[in-house]
Length: 200
Image (cartoon, rainbow, N blue to C red; front, side, top):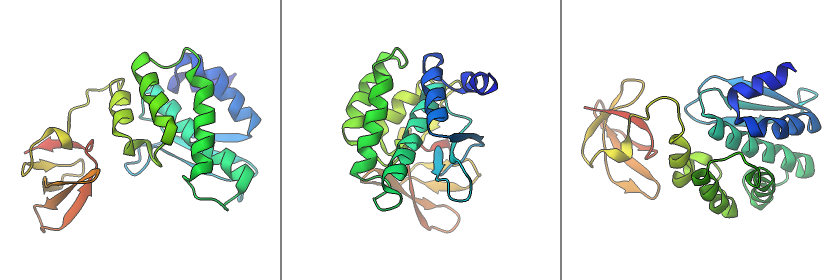
């Protein structure tokens, strides 16, 4: 089956049958998307199309790809039950995400370190996987390419460059993100601790 062969390129092998079943049962059109810095995936309901659409960034490792898929599938389940009458990441979504994750957490899919973090994470899931630092750190361990340097690795006041070439000075941490100043115009921006950077 062509779809199954495609899934084998992106998912842990032991999860493919379950994901394939979910796709068929829910009439999902799965789109493999290019890298997006603002999100790992998204869900669109069957308003303009006769199917549910889930898109997942192609550049994630298999375990991160699976977690993102389940995150978006939970949005689908919530939409079917409630349409747009509830908060996108409210209690309904958290409950559905937890229920879906529990199905695959009890199968031989995730390494022990990821599984242990997920078991804690699903108790009160974040709106974005990138907001859960413990989860994103353990998932990044399984990336194929070297992780390089992240913003949290360098000291305060250090100068760094981001992917688009812009240069910043690292500032203090505000709750979950660092407030950094642009070297070019001194404007301030909030950055995720795990933003890939190049120290200057």
